[in-house]
Image (tube, helix red, strand yellow):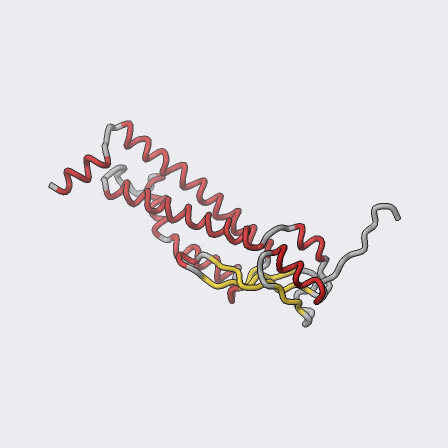
Length: 183
């Protein structure tokens, strides 16, 4: 048949190629547990970032499809960057609140954002425990987590950016406030 390519399955002779292209050590699962996919094993870093240590690949997985999915390391970097951006948002909002701009009126968008970001570590921890337990995750779940945290960031960034613009429009000078506080 024209265009037909036989499926290339995981095999010991393809381990080096898989490791190089996925950018992490690869092990073939011979237990049958994985069926036709792969799982990423990782260790936690600062602020619950993840560092890949190994990928387990099902022995009957279509290697060409897996390799087409791209670098595991790059996916982890995207996840970690998203968490870092959320931590930066938390710091920006904390700085605004310390300067008294804006006031945290219960029920306001800024108040809700402050409440959510003050629990950021717990949210990340709970999601990792529920979806990435035992420091193992499949790539589809990792991609879904990245999408969740990117959406979470987008929602909260809009609120914080608005609060920062409001502060600026009021003529509040954060540097001057810091100097005045030191007097």
